[in-house]
Each structure stands twice: as C-alpha cells, then as structure tokens.
Image (cartoon, rainbow, N blue to C red):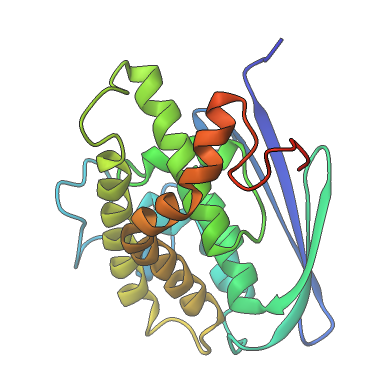
Length: 239
C-alpha cells in the first residue's frame, strides 16, 4: 500500500577548498517539514520587486528564503569549478562530479519547489519524488508525467491541451528565478549560486520549447507501452 510520502535528502558537496558542506532537506506532500525563517538577507526581500499577483505575506520571498544556505555556502565560488557531490535518499545514493552550478541547481530546485511559494507550487509533486542531478531531458519527461497525473487527479485529463498548466507553471517559475537572480547579483562575490539559478531558468525555458519535440520523439514508445506492445521495429518483444 502507498502511504503519504515523506522524503529526506542529504546533499554533501566537497568544495574546492577541501571543506565539505551538507544540506539536509526534509519534505512531504505539503512542502518543507522545517519552518523557514520569517526573514532573511536583504536580497530575499520583495520590497523592490515582487512577482505579479504574489499572495505571500511578509517582506521576504519564500523561494529565496529556502535557498539562503546554498547561496551562502557557495557565495565566493566560480560556477565552473568542478566538485564532487553526493545526494543520499532513503533507498539510494547518487554521486556526481560536475560544475558547482549544476550541483547548486539540483539543491535549489528541490528547496524552491517545496518552499511554499505559490508560483512554484505545481512542482511540489515532483519534489516529493526528487531525482538528484537530473538532466534537461529527464526533467522535461518527469514534468510531463506529473502534469498528466495532476490532470487525472483533478478530473480534467480530457481537456484539449493537458500540458497547458505545465507550460504556465514553467513560465511562472521563470519569473521567480529572474527576480531572485536580480536580487542576488550584488550579494554574491562569485557566480556559483547565481548560475545555479540560471541553470534552473534554462531548464524552465527549454522545457517550454522542448516539450513538444520530446513528446514527438517518445510517441512510438509511449503508444507501444500503452497497448502492451513492443515499440515499432522490435516486434519480438525483446527490450
């Protein structure tokens, strides 16, 4: 039996100076299990700019508050620095050697999706089934799958364009990323954290334009799976 899901992800990053830094993130289907602080650094404040139709009360952006530990840990590191990082989940550990901006993107994306920011709320379902260090292709397909599951849950799967909410959610995510990035520019001594957000923004933009081509490419395999048949050209049933 499936139970309401809780997830704990611990990221460990070996910084270029030899220091190891950890980020422990706990969440359930409602979001982060630990309360975010009521306030944060000046760059988290929404006094100067606020997302259109933002409903969050208080001076600080919840998505920005959720990534403060990542920003501060990587504040003086160049985004192209190669680091070794590990993500420990309950049933497996993922390890990667990659530019620190790619690692930062993975941690920031999870933290922001679970932060309680209403603009990014559609991605909370993906967060509870987090896949560390995802590629663009993996992210697009997972987002499409969760969108269809969400439409099924709402009873609107038969709508003319079931992916319209996903496109809209990606565009709202772009707005959040843009405003936080603007606030961060004067705060960071180097660009690791800033380019981590840039990577997330690129995922959002690429998702909007890449979803159709990804679905076209996957259509033969998806049709075969749905019918219980092997993909075209593989009628023997050998996968």
